[in-house]
Image (cartoon, rainbow, N blue to C red; front, side, top):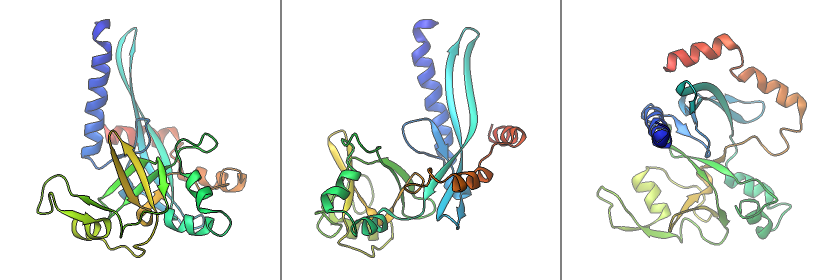
Length: 230
């Protein structure tokens, strides 16, 4: 069986991911952590959201295959990336701001963002960079997939209004981008939120202590939540 171990583990992971996504869970980052945005809570004191979720891993041990499921929590910055950039512009140059979102910058952690076009249209991306010259008004592309808009060329402003039924407040905002194989995906910063705590938040012990109440740390609560999920 050892020669099939990798295939079996991959199969189990695919099944678990499919089951979670079918229940509207969103994977954030590269680790197998899935979160449910609609059960999120807003923490007004710190302008952040807390999302409940699950961590799922499978392993091959001496006694066989094991699936480990545990609870986890994700904190989301409620400030949009666009608003964050506007704040940074007061003290930083455009090049310095772009460097903050550059995945090749080893001095800064890679930024993961959440895009939100509605309560049921939430996705996460690991950002590769920020284009401060391209905007939703100037960026155009051919629409892929199905539907009446297939093969039409649209600007991002037109695409968001037609496909997602949302309108941009700032059509000249900079765009984040994600490199995926031979394609570059652009994201409107107005609808992006960093999937992390605000800058310098973790260095404040008082704030970090206050967040403990929002985590599922009680063993009984964790077990009940896992049992409910399974």
